[in-house]
Length: 342
Image (cartoon, rainbow, N blue to C red; front, side, top):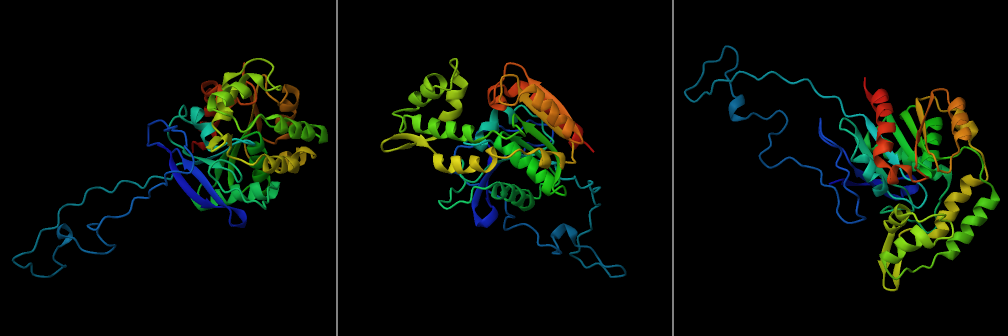
């Protein structure tokens, strides 16, 4: 099971993350975070654990030159000390707008062990706090990610971000290169989307027939009936069903749509090429062939990045890591292994 971690972000906001770390040689657990229930348990020493510096029966031995007493116990030969293991390289996963940490689970379970993989519910999303007054600015999201890296001792970390989370990742890499080892950008544009895009999203939220009478209705609307769906897309329906919670009047999103619009407002009017060019660490740009990031723009992003590389997932759309987890992991894992292997 993924272990829940309760953390503190910028402005004291309460954040929840999920540790998917697997043991050496094993695969990451990939269990989907199931919301706010269940806190992680940190093992504590039991009552019989020896205190630092305390003597135990098998440690007793005569001091040099001392005469052993009748009850003296010979000191056993010490076993060779194993060399201390270096901590597993840290990987922090940042979901996109309206997503949550659990959306990474299908992809995470396909990654091999050797990394410490943590998925964050960003502010306003999943099990993390949704402060009514915000802020939901770019600065707040970046500061939250930095706080998580520092609190968990993940740095220098490999940041893997999808959509909005990818923008947060590369802005953190540009601002705090000391915290970031490498970067994976999944289907996020560097170009400005413009005011028309924001108006389209406002209209789209108004069309949601929320509250939904059932999860089946959620699947059906987002997978087929939504005007934005060109052909039936069951995976899209499943994606949105995962961010719904039941209320007395039906199923509603765990997030506040107005907060999502506010979050989006802080990046759609500006281009982000300047911050992308400031990223100095190795960076992989991944796109779905039918995603929102076009091939020409993706390749230009790779050109602008000082150490950029490119990969694409055939047949995948914007939700590439969720709908095509095996192909995504096959594209990303060689890069991860390359930057995380000493």
